[in-house]
Length: 386
Ligand code: RM4
Ligand code: MN
Image (cartoon, rainbow, N blue to C red; front, side, top):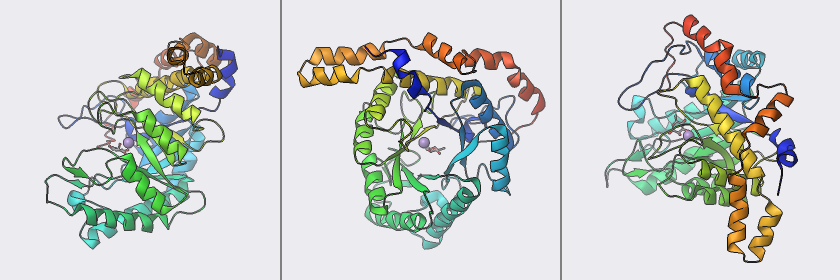
């Protein structure tokens, strides 16, 4: 049996990037509910992200979405984040909210619209230079609703060309991270619907192009951990967008819908070398908190990832390999499940306290007065992520 003491040192390596859009107002197609304490500025979103890090020690970076998080001076914003105790992480592009992008962006048949989408990414790369961000994350809403509407093949060719132009502008160790999603907003075809398509494109680009796996972006019953295994195997897993889903892209709190799936994913991450100081797989959250309080929603989320990482680290891999080698199906399964069923909450609380963090970050946040303060101070906050 592997013990908590044995795995504890590895918990030090955990860093989970939080999305700025988790702190702004968000909703469904039906309604965006405003919530008291909504940030009025990008800086206030950074304050909230920094609060998550203060209470958990787990969230040293915040990802930005452009143009939602547009400011005049990104170098100043990066300094603001540093003063708050965190850093600016991934820059996410957005080609899904401008009128021009109705029929696509990087795949568009009109060269002028496609150029506009490419230029937007070049602007994102400039921002990365100012903020010191490493990753440019691209999720495309591109696709079509009706058979015959679009030339799917030509769109793939245009996409490859657009990505090539963007990739060529990256410098140093900056990466292009391509995210896939099965459907929505397009309902017939999507231009980057799956990991295979994403992989084909990033492989054509080169070494610094990798895939983002958003856990909510697959068909029901997809074996997501298998995708993790394969992408790690070929060195192309760049990052995760963690969240939970019951139906489609629900963006609920990671680990809330299917904790066992999160465990299986994290086991494959660890087994495949995707966790630890030598790995450059970025762990990110991509969530919205439509009805619950946002900051505690984020605290809960990073704690869920930490808890499941600890349990996945507890798998006795030597014993597991021996049972697999012996063809002992039930012993192998039991070794795996023993780790999943281990309750690590008390050990994690003690471990946090030993590092000067609150043992119960949810309770500590509730008692801190931060929520009451932002609800009183930020009257009229309208920062939106939609
Ligand atoms: C997309 C995708 C992207 C995220 C946007 C807001 O569905 O998951 O990662 O940036 O939503
Ligand atoms: Mn995502």
